[in-house]
Length: 114
Image 1: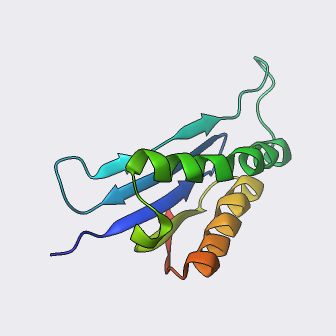
Image 2 (image 1 turned 45 degrees about the horizontal axis):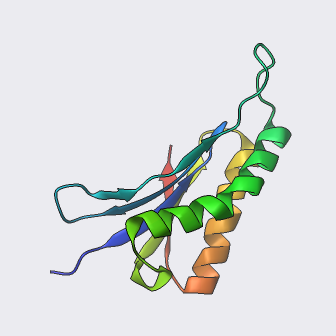
Image 3 (image 1 turned 120 degrees about the vertical axis):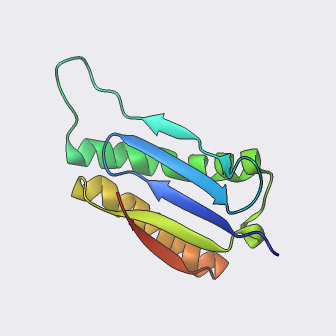
């Protein structure tokens, strides 16, 4: 049986994560690097600034996830992203990156409810 590998992006709020998972082995999580948008205490995070953070870090996290999982884009079977619920602007970053990777890598997309 072949192993299925899925790369997913979760960015519905101030945490941005890229996970690579499989359906085989003892540990199905191959990698899961994350970056958190941290604001000064008591200020909270706004959608636009949170989305800017995600745009700044998402490509680096995708590269890091692939490296940590020791795989290449050709090894990925499908791409997943958080459809919602969450903050619109940050969610759009994950959706746009997954759509772009889908075109570049010719992979199907799975929308996931957070």
